[in-house]
Image (cartoon, rainbow, N blue to C red; front, side):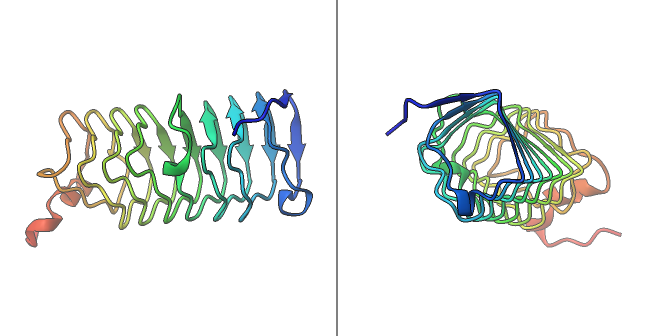
Length: 191
């Protein structure tokens, strides 16, 4: 159930929403700086063109949360189920974030940019990551299965394991030596 409250253009600085509680509303063009959202229920809240910088969302609940044009910088997003978000107009970008154990299962994330992120054991199964950019990202243990990775850029990403037989990788960009991440299932030795 969406709310009819509307909050626009505000800056929230060093607020611990675990203590204060967050108002169920539509937030547009707001900035959240060094705020604590860890473990809180953010269900049915809408964020449009908002920025989160140095915020902690670990284990927050995102049921039907709308994230439209949202940027996360230097945020801790451990274990988040982004696949619970409202998929309508979902648009995200991440820079210098900890996304370990997050799930993007079955989401359409075309053109999403992940820059300098730790993304260990992230679930990208059945996601559409066409033209996504993984710049300087650690993808150790990230799961790609039936994932659309066409035109995705992995040139500076590392520690990924992607099976070309069960993922669509046409025109994806890779670089040496990290491209060996496409050969992992063959259990071969390269010298």
